[in-house]
Length: 284
Figure: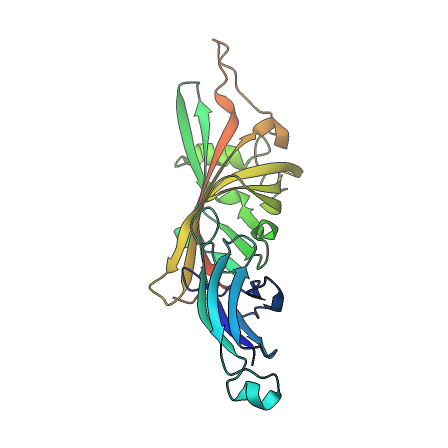
């Protein structure tokens, strides 16, 4: 076998889209191979004896280079199998360009028990009313080759709005605002992702609420990945955005004698999300 290598992130996750290029001392390419789904490179092309430079690249990661010496010579199958013409690179660790290691690719499921969907509205121009939705679900798909192609979808039960005041919550559920009888779900589907910093992103997407669909961007911060007490892996995110009520046909307002609106026209949305690796939540 000509080349064997394992490509990993600093957290130990496989980099399945890595490319390994081997060049000789004259700069001539002697071998090029791609990692498999486990981040492993195996190529049977035998190499001539001598010194080589091994260069490992992957989208979103800083390239890594190392030197290897191939001994034994020969290009026949028998000699290659006995060790001649083989380069064992071992494990190559790639650092993500610009920040913390990203979650491993694949499906992730939002854990509503350890997540929150909250909104803040101005009240009487002097204070704020805080509310949240208690029933929601979501899924995230981390793209393997290009993180900007990752996707997120979420569904919120509109009737689960909770501001800590039953009368106010009832009004918010009415046709003046969310109109939950006609539009029981609030949905969000991403359409793209743009990096804005080392661990910050803009999620482009479409928010459906009260029968209206609008383009809404989320300012997203990735907070890290780690194991949980139940044997799984979790990733944490925080996202914010600002919505205008009139964009979603919520035009109700009460104007006081002084000309001050009782409720502000904008909403600040704050999302704190924990997602569990996999297509479903674990039974705990």
